[in-house]
Length: 298
Length: 295
Image 1 (cartoon, chains in turn blue, purple):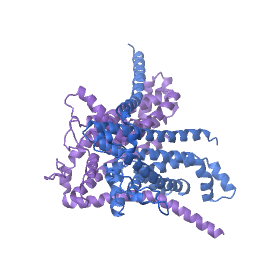
Image 2 (cartoon, chains in turn blue, red):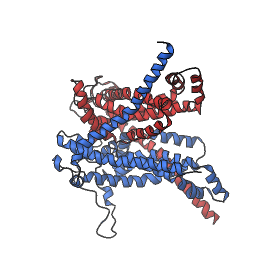
Image 3 (cartoon, helix red, strand yellow):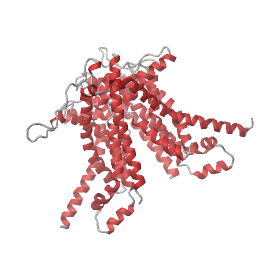
Image 4 (cartoon, one colour):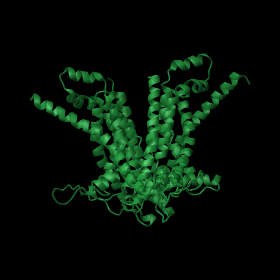
Protein backbone atom coordinates (compact mmCIF):
# COMPACT_ATOMS: atom_id res chain seq x y z
CA UNK A 1 0.00 0.00 0.00
CA UNK A 2 1.38 3.43 -0.86
CA UNK A 3 2.01 6.10 1.71
CA UNK A 4 -0.97 8.09 0.51
CA UNK A 5 -3.32 5.15 0.71
CA UNK A 6 -2.12 4.39 4.23
CA UNK A 7 -2.75 7.96 5.31
CA UNK A 8 -6.22 7.90 3.82
CA UNK A 9 -6.95 4.68 5.63
CA UNK A 10 -5.89 6.15 8.96
CA UNK A 11 -7.96 9.20 8.22
CA UNK A 12 -11.09 7.17 7.62
CA UNK A 13 -10.35 4.98 10.63
CA UNK A 14 -10.13 7.99 12.88
CA UNK A 15 -13.37 9.28 11.45
CA UNK A 16 -15.03 6.21 12.88
CA UNK A 17 -13.05 6.18 16.12
CA UNK A 18 -13.75 9.85 16.76
CA UNK A 19 -17.45 9.36 16.23
CA UNK A 20 -17.45 6.41 18.60
CA UNK A 21 -15.57 8.41 21.22
CA UNK A 22 -18.04 11.25 20.89
CA UNK A 23 -20.98 8.92 21.25
CA UNK A 24 -19.45 7.04 24.18
CA UNK A 25 -20.40 9.58 26.80
CA UNK A 26 -23.91 9.86 25.47
CA UNK A 27 -24.46 6.12 25.31
CA UNK A 28 -23.27 5.73 28.89
CA UNK A 29 -25.68 8.46 29.91
CA UNK A 30 -28.51 6.62 28.16
CA UNK A 31 -27.52 3.35 29.81
CA UNK A 32 -27.52 5.07 33.17
CA UNK A 33 -30.97 6.54 32.65
CA UNK A 34 -32.43 3.26 31.45
CA UNK A 35 -30.84 1.39 34.36
CA UNK A 36 -32.20 3.83 36.92
CA UNK A 37 -35.64 3.80 35.35
CA UNK A 38 -35.75 0.03 35.38
CA UNK A 39 -34.67 -0.09 39.02
CA UNK A 40 -36.75 2.69 40.39
CA UNK A 41 -39.83 3.31 38.30
CA UNK A 42 -41.69 0.73 40.32
CA UNK A 43 -41.30 2.73 43.50
CA UNK A 44 -42.63 6.00 42.15
CA UNK A 45 -46.03 6.99 43.32
CA UNK A 46 -47.97 9.02 45.79
CA UNK A 47 -46.82 6.93 48.72
CA UNK A 48 -43.18 7.43 47.82
CA UNK A 49 -43.55 11.18 47.55
CA UNK A 50 -45.39 11.63 50.80
CA UNK A 51 -43.72 9.27 53.25
CA UNK A 52 -40.80 9.76 55.52
CA UNK A 53 -37.80 7.44 55.41
CA UNK A 54 -38.31 4.23 57.27
CA UNK A 55 -36.43 1.17 58.38
CA UNK A 56 -38.50 -0.84 55.96
CA UNK A 57 -37.63 -0.16 52.33
CA UNK A 58 -41.17 -0.63 51.09
CA UNK A 59 -42.51 2.06 53.36
CA UNK A 60 -39.75 4.61 52.88
CA UNK A 61 -40.38 7.83 51.02
CA UNK A 62 -38.76 11.11 50.07
CA UNK A 63 -41.09 13.59 51.78
CA UNK A 64 -38.51 15.10 54.09
CA UNK A 65 -35.95 14.97 51.31
CA UNK A 66 -37.81 16.90 48.66
CA UNK A 67 -39.29 19.39 51.11
CA UNK A 68 -35.78 19.99 52.42
CA UNK A 69 -34.50 20.43 48.88
CA UNK A 70 -37.17 23.03 48.14
CA UNK A 71 -36.40 24.93 51.36
CA UNK A 72 -32.66 24.94 50.73
CA UNK A 73 -32.99 25.84 47.04
CA UNK A 74 -35.28 28.80 47.67
CA UNK A 75 -32.97 30.27 50.30
CA UNK A 76 -29.86 29.55 48.21
CA UNK A 77 -31.43 31.28 45.21
CA UNK A 78 -32.47 34.24 47.35
CA UNK A 79 -28.88 34.69 48.53
CA UNK A 80 -26.98 33.86 45.36
CA UNK A 81 -29.06 35.83 42.86
CA UNK A 82 -28.62 39.34 44.30
CA UNK A 83 -25.09 38.76 45.54
CA UNK A 84 -23.88 37.17 42.33
CA UNK A 85 -25.50 39.68 40.00
CA UNK A 86 -24.23 42.59 42.10
CA UNK A 87 -20.68 41.25 42.14
CA UNK A 88 -20.71 40.57 38.40
CA UNK A 89 -22.18 44.00 37.68
CA UNK A 90 -19.42 45.64 39.65
CA UNK A 91 -16.71 43.64 37.92
CA UNK A 92 -18.10 44.17 34.47
CA UNK A 93 -19.44 47.73 34.55
CA UNK A 94 -17.66 49.59 37.29
CA UNK A 95 -14.22 48.27 37.92
CA UNK A 96 -11.19 49.80 36.28
CA UNK A 97 -8.46 47.71 34.79
CA UNK A 98 -6.16 47.74 37.74
CA UNK A 99 -4.40 45.21 39.91
CA UNK A 100 -7.33 44.91 42.27
CA UNK A 101 -9.83 43.95 39.59
CA UNK A 102 -7.41 41.45 38.07
CA UNK A 103 -6.99 39.94 41.51
CA UNK A 104 -10.75 39.72 41.96
CA UNK A 105 -11.12 37.96 38.64
CA UNK A 106 -8.41 35.42 39.32
CA UNK A 107 -9.96 34.86 42.71
CA UNK A 108 -13.40 34.05 41.33
CA UNK A 109 -11.98 31.82 38.61
CA UNK A 110 -10.13 29.95 41.33
CA UNK A 111 -13.22 29.58 43.50
CA UNK A 112 -15.01 27.92 40.60
CA UNK A 113 -12.46 25.12 40.70
CA UNK A 114 -12.49 24.40 44.43
CA UNK A 115 -13.92 20.95 45.29
CA UNK A 116 -17.37 21.34 46.80
CA UNK A 117 -16.46 19.36 49.91
CA UNK A 118 -14.09 22.17 50.92
CA UNK A 119 -17.00 24.61 50.89
CA UNK A 120 -18.61 22.17 53.28
CA UNK A 121 -15.67 22.50 55.65
CA UNK A 122 -15.89 26.28 55.43
CA UNK A 123 -19.63 26.19 56.08
CA UNK A 124 -19.14 23.85 59.01
CA UNK A 125 -16.66 26.12 60.72
CA UNK A 126 -18.20 29.50 59.94
CA UNK A 127 -21.95 28.99 59.60
CA UNK A 128 -22.57 26.03 61.85
CA UNK A 129 -20.09 26.70 64.64
CA UNK A 130 -18.90 30.31 64.56
CA UNK A 131 -22.24 31.89 63.68
CA UNK A 132 -24.06 29.35 65.78
CA UNK A 133 -26.60 28.45 63.12
CA UNK A 134 -26.27 24.77 63.86
CA UNK A 135 -27.12 22.12 61.30
CA UNK A 136 -29.95 24.15 59.91
CA UNK A 137 -31.55 24.95 56.59
CA UNK A 138 -29.95 28.39 56.73
CA UNK A 139 -26.45 27.03 57.26
CA UNK A 140 -26.97 24.57 54.43
CA UNK A 141 -28.31 27.20 52.06
CA UNK A 142 -25.47 29.62 52.85
CA UNK A 143 -22.94 26.87 52.23
CA UNK A 144 -24.54 25.97 48.91
CA UNK A 145 -24.52 29.65 47.98
CA UNK A 146 -20.74 29.54 48.26
CA UNK A 147 -20.72 26.74 45.70
CA UNK A 148 -23.20 28.42 43.36
CA UNK A 149 -21.82 31.96 43.55
CA UNK A 150 -18.87 31.62 41.14
CA UNK A 151 -21.13 30.06 38.50
CA UNK A 152 -23.64 32.90 38.77
CA UNK A 153 -20.92 35.53 38.64
CA UNK A 154 -19.26 34.07 35.54
CA UNK A 155 -22.57 33.61 33.71
CA UNK A 156 -23.80 37.09 34.60
CA UNK A 157 -20.56 38.65 33.41
CA UNK A 158 -20.89 36.93 30.07
CA UNK A 159 -24.48 38.07 29.77
CA UNK A 160 -23.51 41.66 30.57
CA UNK A 161 -20.63 41.50 28.13
CA UNK A 162 -22.99 40.43 25.37
CA UNK A 163 -25.00 43.62 25.65
CA UNK A 164 -23.66 45.87 22.90
CA UNK A 165 -22.03 49.12 23.88
CA UNK A 166 -24.37 51.14 21.68
CA UNK A 167 -27.10 50.62 24.27
CA UNK A 168 -24.96 52.10 26.99
CA UNK A 169 -23.78 54.95 24.80
CA UNK A 170 -27.32 55.83 23.80
CA UNK A 171 -28.33 56.04 27.44
CA UNK A 172 -25.39 58.26 28.29
CA UNK A 173 -26.19 60.45 25.32
CA UNK A 174 -29.64 60.99 26.77
CA UNK A 175 -28.09 62.15 30.04
CA UNK A 176 -28.32 59.03 32.19
CA UNK A 177 -25.64 58.37 34.75
CA UNK A 178 -23.93 55.03 35.18
CA UNK A 179 -26.34 53.47 37.62
CA UNK A 180 -29.37 54.55 35.59
CA UNK A 181 -27.84 53.00 32.51
CA UNK A 182 -26.92 49.80 34.22
CA UNK A 183 -30.15 49.38 36.09
CA UNK A 184 -32.51 50.60 33.39
CA UNK A 185 -30.88 49.31 30.23
CA UNK A 186 -27.98 46.93 30.61
CA UNK A 187 -29.27 44.54 33.24
CA UNK A 188 -32.74 44.19 31.72
CA UNK A 189 -31.14 43.51 28.36
CA UNK A 190 -28.90 40.86 29.90
CA UNK A 191 -31.67 39.36 32.02
CA UNK A 192 -32.29 36.19 29.95
CA UNK A 193 -28.59 35.34 30.11
CA UNK A 194 -28.49 36.15 33.81
CA UNK A 195 -31.53 34.01 34.55
CA UNK A 196 -30.07 31.22 32.49
CA UNK A 197 -26.89 31.37 34.56
CA UNK A 198 -28.77 31.41 37.85
CA UNK A 199 -30.92 28.44 36.85
CA UNK A 200 -27.83 26.57 35.73
CA UNK A 201 -26.13 27.26 39.05
CA UNK A 202 -29.24 26.10 40.91
CA UNK A 203 -29.43 22.93 38.88
CA UNK A 204 -25.85 22.15 39.90
CA UNK A 205 -26.51 23.07 43.50
CA UNK A 206 -29.55 20.82 43.71
CA UNK A 207 -27.37 17.78 43.17
CA UNK A 208 -24.67 18.76 45.63
CA UNK A 209 -24.28 16.26 48.40
CA UNK A 210 -20.79 16.56 49.87
CA UNK A 211 -20.97 20.12 51.27
CA UNK A 212 -24.29 19.44 52.99
CA UNK A 213 -23.13 16.16 54.49
CA UNK A 214 -20.07 17.94 55.80
CA UNK A 215 -22.06 20.64 57.55
CA UNK A 216 -24.04 17.89 59.15
CA UNK A 217 -27.35 17.70 57.32
CA UNK A 218 -28.79 14.61 58.89
CA UNK A 219 -29.48 11.52 56.89
CA UNK A 220 -32.45 10.12 58.73
CA UNK A 221 -35.03 12.79 59.13
CA UNK A 222 -38.60 12.01 60.05
CA UNK A 223 -39.82 15.58 60.34
CA UNK A 224 -40.09 18.68 58.20
CA UNK A 225 -38.72 22.15 58.86
CA UNK A 226 -41.36 24.34 60.52
CA UNK A 227 -43.79 25.51 57.89
CA UNK A 228 -43.38 29.14 56.84
CA UNK A 229 -47.10 29.64 57.16
CA UNK A 230 -48.23 29.72 60.72
CA UNK A 231 -51.66 29.92 62.29
CA UNK A 232 -51.01 32.97 64.41
CA UNK A 233 -50.09 36.52 63.54
CA UNK A 234 -48.06 37.51 61.55
CA UNK A 235 -48.84 34.30 59.65
CA UNK A 236 -45.35 34.04 58.24
CA UNK A 237 -42.66 32.28 60.23
CA UNK A 238 -39.02 31.88 59.36
CA UNK A 239 -38.34 29.48 62.22
CA UNK A 240 -38.02 26.70 59.69
CA UNK A 241 -34.72 28.19 58.62
CA UNK A 242 -33.13 27.04 61.84
CA UNK A 243 -34.48 23.51 61.78
CA UNK A 244 -32.60 20.40 60.82
CA UNK A 245 -33.14 19.09 57.32
CA UNK A 246 -32.13 16.67 54.66
CA UNK A 247 -32.08 16.93 50.90
CA UNK A 248 -32.79 14.55 48.06
CA UNK A 249 -29.19 13.70 47.11
CA UNK A 250 -28.32 12.94 50.74
CA UNK A 251 -31.35 10.68 51.08
CA UNK A 252 -30.29 8.85 47.93
CA UNK A 253 -26.77 8.51 49.27
CA UNK A 254 -28.09 7.17 52.53
CA UNK A 255 -30.18 4.52 50.79
CA UNK A 256 -27.37 3.46 48.47
CA UNK A 257 -25.16 2.91 51.50
CA UNK A 258 -27.53 0.40 53.06
CA UNK A 259 -27.01 -3.29 52.49
CA UNK A 260 -30.65 -4.26 51.99
CA UNK A 261 -31.55 -4.54 48.36
CA UNK A 262 -34.94 -2.87 48.83
CA UNK A 263 -33.24 0.41 49.59
CA UNK A 264 -31.53 0.37 46.21
CA UNK A 265 -34.92 0.62 44.59
CA UNK A 266 -35.80 3.51 46.86
CA UNK A 267 -32.52 5.16 45.88
CA UNK A 268 -33.35 4.64 42.20
CA UNK A 269 -36.77 6.19 42.73
CA UNK A 270 -35.18 9.18 44.40
CA UNK A 271 -32.69 9.45 41.56
CA UNK A 272 -35.47 9.56 38.99
CA UNK A 273 -37.05 12.48 40.83
CA UNK A 274 -33.71 14.26 41.27
CA UNK A 275 -32.62 13.70 37.67
CA UNK A 276 -35.97 14.90 36.37
CA UNK A 277 -35.65 18.14 38.32
CA UNK A 278 -31.97 18.70 37.50
CA UNK A 279 -32.37 17.97 33.79
CA UNK A 280 -35.50 20.10 33.55
CA UNK A 281 -33.74 23.05 35.13
CA UNK A 282 -30.70 22.54 32.97
CA UNK A 283 -32.84 22.32 29.85
CA UNK A 284 -34.67 25.48 30.86
CA UNK A 285 -31.40 27.33 31.29
CA UNK A 286 -30.08 26.21 27.91
CA UNK A 287 -33.41 27.00 26.25
CA UNK A 288 -33.43 30.51 27.72
CA UNK A 289 -29.90 31.09 26.56
CA UNK A 290 -30.53 30.00 22.98
CA UNK A 291 -33.94 31.51 22.55
CA UNK A 292 -32.93 34.96 23.65
CA UNK A 293 -29.51 34.85 22.08
CA UNK A 294 -31.17 34.37 18.71
CA UNK A 295 -33.87 36.95 19.34
CA UNK A 296 -31.44 39.72 20.21
CA UNK A 297 -31.01 41.38 16.88
CA UNK A 298 -29.06 44.40 17.90
CA UNK B 1 -30.99 67.37 44.68
CA UNK B 2 -27.69 66.76 42.91
CA UNK B 3 -26.02 65.94 46.22
CA UNK B 4 -28.70 63.37 47.02
CA UNK B 5 -28.20 61.71 43.67
CA UNK B 6 -24.43 61.61 44.06
CA UNK B 7 -24.77 60.05 47.47
CA UNK B 8 -27.16 57.42 46.18
CA UNK B 9 -24.82 56.57 43.32
CA UNK B 10 -21.90 56.28 45.69
CA UNK B 11 -23.87 54.03 48.03
CA UNK B 12 -24.90 51.75 45.21
CA UNK B 13 -21.37 51.55 43.87
CA UNK B 14 -20.22 50.70 47.36
CA UNK B 15 -22.79 47.94 47.67
CA UNK B 16 -21.77 46.47 44.34
CA UNK B 17 -18.11 46.66 45.27
CA UNK B 18 -18.84 44.94 48.58
CA UNK B 19 -20.56 42.13 46.71
CA UNK B 20 -17.54 41.67 44.53
CA UNK B 21 -15.35 41.73 47.60
CA UNK B 22 -17.39 38.91 49.11
CA UNK B 23 -15.57 36.56 46.78
CA UNK B 24 -12.31 37.55 48.42
CA UNK B 25 -13.91 36.97 51.80
CA UNK B 26 -14.82 33.46 50.73
CA UNK B 27 -11.29 32.62 49.67
CA UNK B 28 -9.94 34.17 52.84
CA UNK B 29 -12.46 32.12 54.79
CA UNK B 30 -11.41 28.88 53.17
CA UNK B 31 -7.73 29.50 53.69
CA UNK B 32 -8.26 30.84 57.20
CA UNK B 33 -10.42 27.96 58.39
CA UNK B 34 -8.15 25.34 56.90
CA UNK B 35 -5.00 26.90 58.32
CA UNK B 36 -6.54 27.42 61.74
CA UNK B 37 -7.72 23.86 62.21
CA UNK B 38 -4.68 22.33 60.51
CA UNK B 39 -2.42 24.28 62.84
CA UNK B 40 -4.26 22.75 65.76
CA UNK B 41 -3.85 19.35 64.14
CA UNK B 42 -0.13 19.73 63.68
CA UNK B 43 0.33 20.67 67.31
CA UNK B 44 -0.42 17.04 68.11
CA UNK B 45 0.75 15.24 64.99
CA UNK B 46 4.23 15.92 63.61
CA UNK B 47 4.27 16.99 59.96
CA UNK B 48 6.80 14.26 59.18
CA UNK B 49 4.42 11.55 60.44
CA UNK B 50 1.58 13.07 58.45
CA UNK B 51 3.58 12.96 55.25
CA UNK B 52 5.34 9.63 55.62
CA UNK B 53 3.36 7.27 57.85
CA UNK B 54 1.89 4.49 55.75
CA UNK B 55 -1.31 4.06 57.71
CA UNK B 56 -4.33 6.27 58.23
CA UNK B 57 -6.25 5.10 61.29
CA UNK B 58 -7.35 8.18 63.24
CA UNK B 59 -10.60 6.58 64.31
CA UNK B 60 -9.11 3.35 65.62
CA UNK B 61 -7.49 2.70 68.96
CA UNK B 62 -4.02 2.45 67.42
CA UNK B 63 -3.89 5.85 65.79
CA UNK B 64 -1.82 6.57 62.72
CA UNK B 65 -2.02 9.82 60.84
CA UNK B 66 -0.23 9.19 57.57
CA UNK B 67 -1.99 10.83 54.63
CA UNK B 68 -0.29 8.59 52.06
CA UNK B 69 -3.00 5.87 51.97
CA UNK B 70 -5.68 8.47 51.28
CA UNK B 71 -3.54 10.08 48.60
CA UNK B 72 -2.94 6.64 47.11
CA UNK B 73 -6.69 6.12 46.90
CA UNK B 74 -7.20 9.52 45.26
CA UNK B 75 -4.29 8.85 42.94
CA UNK B 76 -5.64 5.47 41.83
CA UNK B 77 -9.13 6.71 41.06
CA UNK B 78 -7.75 9.79 39.31
CA UNK B 79 -5.39 7.75 37.13
CA UNK B 80 -8.19 5.41 36.06
CA UNK B 81 -10.48 8.37 35.41
CA UNK B 82 -7.91 10.18 33.28
CA UNK B 83 -7.10 6.96 31.40
CA UNK B 84 -10.69 7.14 30.21
CA UNK B 85 -11.22 10.89 29.95
CA UNK B 86 -8.03 11.93 28.18
CA UNK B 87 -8.12 9.69 25.11
CA UNK B 88 -11.89 9.81 24.73
CA UNK B 89 -12.09 13.52 25.43
CA UNK B 90 -9.28 14.40 23.06
CA UNK B 91 -10.62 12.13 20.33
CA UNK B 92 -14.02 13.74 20.76
CA UNK B 93 -12.49 17.19 20.56
CA UNK B 94 -10.54 16.34 17.40
CA UNK B 95 -13.60 14.76 15.82
CA UNK B 96 -15.83 17.74 16.62
CA UNK B 97 -13.22 20.25 15.57
CA UNK B 98 -11.82 18.66 12.41
CA UNK B 99 -14.26 16.10 11.13
CA UNK B 100 -17.79 16.87 12.15
CA UNK B 101 -20.13 19.13 10.23
CA UNK B 102 -21.54 22.24 11.85
CA UNK B 103 -24.87 20.50 12.38
CA UNK B 104 -23.31 17.59 14.23
CA UNK B 105 -21.30 19.99 16.37
CA UNK B 106 -24.37 22.00 17.23
CA UNK B 107 -26.28 18.96 18.41
CA UNK B 108 -23.48 17.13 20.18
CA UNK B 109 -22.20 20.01 22.29
CA UNK B 110 -25.47 20.53 24.22
CA UNK B 111 -25.76 16.77 24.67
CA UNK B 112 -22.35 16.72 26.32
CA UNK B 113 -23.51 19.53 28.58
CA UNK B 114 -26.34 17.29 29.75
CA UNK B 115 -23.76 14.74 30.84
CA UNK B 116 -22.22 17.43 33.00
CA UNK B 117 -25.57 18.21 34.58
CA UNK B 118 -26.12 14.81 36.18
CA UNK B 119 -25.61 14.93 39.96
CA UNK B 120 -22.57 12.98 41.09
CA UNK B 121 -24.64 10.92 43.52
CA UNK B 122 -26.34 9.38 40.50
CA UNK B 123 -23.00 8.44 38.99
CA UNK B 124 -22.08 6.88 42.32
CA UNK B 125 -25.20 4.74 42.22
CA UNK B 126 -24.38 3.74 38.67
CA UNK B 127 -20.80 2.83 39.57
CA UNK B 128 -21.75 0.69 42.54
CA UNK B 129 -24.82 -1.07 41.18
CA UNK B 130 -24.22 -1.36 37.45
CA UNK B 131 -20.56 -0.97 36.55
CA UNK B 132 -19.06 -3.01 39.41
CA UNK B 133 -21.31 -6.06 38.86
CA UNK B 134 -20.67 -5.77 35.13
CA UNK B 135 -16.92 -5.69 35.62
CA UNK B 136 -17.07 -8.53 38.10
CA UNK B 137 -18.20 -10.78 35.29
CA UNK B 138 -14.95 -10.16 33.46
CA UNK B 139 -12.59 -9.67 36.38
CA UNK B 140 -13.35 -12.39 38.91
CA UNK B 141 -11.10 -10.96 41.61
CA UNK B 142 -12.85 -7.60 41.63
CA UNK B 143 -14.15 -6.72 45.06
CA UNK B 144 -17.49 -4.99 45.58
CA UNK B 145 -15.71 -1.75 46.47
CA UNK B 146 -12.76 -0.89 44.31
CA UNK B 147 -11.15 2.00 42.50
CA UNK B 148 -11.61 0.71 38.96
CA UNK B 149 -15.36 1.14 38.77
CA UNK B 150 -15.69 4.67 40.22
CA UNK B 151 -12.57 5.62 38.26
CA UNK B 152 -14.18 4.65 34.96
CA UNK B 153 -17.43 6.42 35.84
CA UNK B 154 -15.53 9.53 36.93
CA UNK B 155 -13.69 9.42 33.62
CA UNK B 156 -16.97 9.50 31.74
CA UNK B 157 -18.12 12.36 33.95
CA UNK B 158 -15.01 14.36 33.09
CA UNK B 159 -15.17 13.79 29.31
CA UNK B 160 -17.30 16.94 28.75
CA UNK B 161 -14.72 19.11 30.52
CA UNK B 162 -11.75 17.77 28.59
CA UNK B 163 -13.60 17.65 25.27
CA UNK B 164 -15.18 21.06 25.53
CA UNK B 165 -12.07 22.97 26.56
CA UNK B 166 -9.81 21.11 24.12
CA UNK B 167 -12.24 21.73 21.31
CA UNK B 168 -12.33 25.44 22.14
CA UNK B 169 -8.55 25.52 21.97
CA UNK B 170 -8.50 23.69 18.63
CA UNK B 171 -11.20 25.91 17.23
CA UNK B 172 -9.02 28.95 17.81
CA UNK B 173 -6.33 27.74 15.45
CA UNK B 174 -6.66 29.85 12.28
CA UNK B 175 -8.22 28.14 9.29
CA UNK B 176 -5.37 29.35 7.12
CA UNK B 177 -2.95 26.97 8.78
CA UNK B 178 -5.24 24.04 8.05
CA UNK B 179 -5.85 25.13 4.48
CA UNK B 180 -2.13 25.34 3.87
CA UNK B 181 -1.74 21.77 5.00
CA UNK B 182 -4.70 20.56 2.96
CA UNK B 183 -3.23 22.28 -0.08
CA UNK B 184 -0.11 20.18 0.42
CA UNK B 185 -2.20 17.03 0.37
CA UNK B 186 -2.61 16.31 4.06
CA UNK B 187 -5.53 14.26 5.35
CA UNK B 188 -7.75 15.53 8.15
CA UNK B 189 -6.00 13.27 10.62
CA UNK B 190 -2.61 14.64 9.60
CA UNK B 191 -3.86 18.18 9.90
CA UNK B 192 -5.28 17.35 13.31
CA UNK B 193 -2.14 15.73 14.66
CA UNK B 194 0.53 17.82 12.96
CA UNK B 195 -0.98 21.28 12.68
CA UNK B 196 -3.87 21.73 15.08
CA UNK B 197 -2.82 19.68 18.08
CA UNK B 198 0.72 21.08 18.38
CA UNK B 199 -0.66 24.60 18.05
CA UNK B 200 -3.42 24.03 20.58
CA UNK B 201 -1.19 22.08 22.92
CA UNK B 202 -1.16 24.48 25.86
CA UNK B 203 -4.93 24.88 25.66
CA UNK B 204 -5.40 21.13 25.52
CA UNK B 205 -2.96 20.65 28.39
CA UNK B 206 -4.96 23.21 30.38
CA UNK B 207 -8.06 21.11 29.72
CA UNK B 208 -6.28 17.94 30.88
CA UNK B 209 -5.12 19.51 34.09
CA UNK B 210 -8.54 20.92 34.85
CA UNK B 211 -9.92 17.42 34.34
CA UNK B 212 -7.37 16.00 36.76
CA UNK B 213 -8.28 18.66 39.31
CA UNK B 214 -11.93 17.70 38.95
CA UNK B 215 -11.13 14.03 39.45
CA UNK B 216 -9.07 14.72 42.55
CA UNK B 217 -11.86 16.76 44.11
CA UNK B 218 -14.67 14.35 43.30
CA UNK B 219 -16.38 13.08 46.42
CA UNK B 220 -19.68 11.25 46.00
CA UNK B 221 -18.79 8.72 43.31
CA UNK B 222 -15.87 7.46 45.36
CA UNK B 223 -17.70 7.73 48.66
CA UNK B 224 -20.34 5.36 47.31
CA UNK B 225 -18.33 2.96 45.21
CA UNK B 226 -14.69 2.97 46.28
CA UNK B 227 -14.95 1.92 49.88
CA UNK B 228 -13.82 3.17 53.27
CA UNK B 229 -10.60 1.26 53.76
CA UNK B 230 -7.55 3.50 53.58
CA UNK B 231 -4.89 1.40 51.98
CA UNK B 232 -1.51 2.21 50.52
CA UNK B 233 -1.79 0.24 47.30
CA UNK B 234 -1.66 0.49 43.53
CA UNK B 235 -4.15 -2.31 43.04
CA UNK B 236 -7.35 -1.01 41.45
CA UNK B 237 -9.33 -4.13 42.37
CA UNK B 238 -9.51 -3.66 46.14
CA UNK B 239 -11.39 -1.25 48.42
CA UNK B 240 -9.59 1.98 49.20
CA UNK B 241 -10.51 5.38 50.54
CA UNK B 242 -9.87 8.76 48.98
CA UNK B 243 -9.17 12.03 50.76
CA UNK B 244 -12.62 13.30 49.87
CA UNK B 245 -14.45 10.13 50.95
CA UNK B 246 -12.73 10.29 54.33
CA UNK B 247 -14.12 13.77 54.98
CA UNK B 248 -17.60 12.49 54.20
CA UNK B 249 -17.12 9.42 56.37
CA UNK B 250 -16.20 11.45 59.44
CA UNK B 251 -18.96 14.00 58.82
CA UNK B 252 -21.52 11.21 58.82
CA UNK B 253 -20.26 9.82 62.11
CA UNK B 254 -20.38 11.24 65.60
CA UNK B 255 -16.87 12.54 66.03
CA UNK B 256 -17.15 15.36 68.58
CA UNK B 257 -16.04 18.77 67.39
CA UNK B 258 -12.80 20.24 68.65
CA UNK B 259 -11.02 16.90 69.00
CA UNK B 260 -7.95 15.74 67.16
CA UNK B 261 -10.05 13.26 65.20
CA UNK B 262 -12.32 16.11 64.13
CA UNK B 263 -9.34 18.14 62.99
CA UNK B 264 -8.20 15.35 60.70
CA UNK B 265 -10.89 16.34 58.21
CA UNK B 266 -9.35 19.79 58.00
CA UNK B 267 -5.87 18.38 57.55
CA UNK B 268 -7.27 16.24 54.76
CA UNK B 269 -9.14 19.24 53.36
CA UNK B 270 -6.01 21.34 53.44
CA UNK B 271 -4.06 18.74 51.45
CA UNK B 272 -6.91 18.51 48.98
CA UNK B 273 -7.13 22.28 48.61
CA UNK B 274 -3.38 22.60 48.12
CA UNK B 275 -3.34 20.01 45.35
CA UNK B 276 -6.39 21.30 43.46
CA UNK B 277 -5.26 24.90 43.88
CA UNK B 278 -1.86 24.11 42.38
CA UNK B 279 -3.49 22.24 39.49
CA UNK B 280 -5.95 25.06 38.82
CA UNK B 281 -3.21 27.71 38.82
CA UNK B 282 -1.19 25.60 36.39
CA UNK B 283 -4.22 25.22 34.16
CA UNK B 284 -4.91 28.97 34.13
CA UNK B 285 -1.29 29.77 33.37
CA UNK B 286 -1.37 27.38 30.40
CA UNK B 287 -4.66 28.80 29.17
CA UNK B 288 -3.33 32.32 29.41
CA UNK B 289 -0.24 31.39 27.43
CA UNK B 290 -2.39 29.83 24.77
CA UNK B 291 -4.61 32.89 24.55
CA UNK B 292 -1.65 35.21 24.19
CA UNK B 293 -0.42 33.30 21.18
CA UNK B 294 -3.69 33.04 19.32
CA UNK B 295 -5.92 35.95 20.30
